[in-house]
Amino acid sequence: RARVTEIFSSLQGEGLYVGQRQIFVRLSGCPWRCRYCDTPGSLAHEGHSAFTVDEVLQKINDLQTERSHAAVSVTGGEPLLQSEFLAALLPAVQALGLRTYLETSATHPDRFRPLVPFCDVVAADIKLPSAIGRALWAEHEEFLRLAGDKAFVKIVLTDQTTDDEFETAVNLLSRLTPPPP
Image (tube, rainbow, N blue to C red; front, side, top):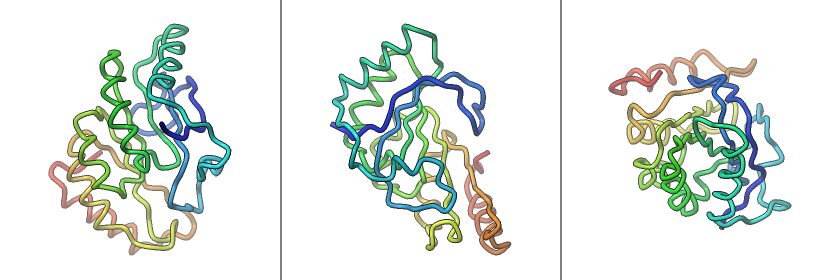
């Protein structure tokens, strides 16, 4: 079971697949409190229903029957906090013939490691220290090395972003082979 905030059909609004129709499965729970968070209702588990994998798959099937989708985007909160659920859900989504698209803070490499084979696309949101109050460079680097060419990177810049932290992020990405888009 996983705590699910919502399951819906929409167009991907950011990243390399912007405009692609996807089914979104938004899981609740997130350890970060980003200054720019656009889904504060998904930060905590309280108030969100627990779904089984079969219940989520039924909703995905219902939405896919209504209209064709290219992928299922698992987002949050931070979906990797419910990695055991994802270990069952992601291969089942692939068995339906849909691509899996993981939207994550890229800060939990240990939880991600067993899921790599079941993620077709990984949208890695690099968290700058000015956004969350601490540096996570080592976690990001390990995560991105695991994700390899499945990942692309998003970095949100705010008026509090420093040149130094932006340069550190660029240097981190340039050390990866190949560097993510």
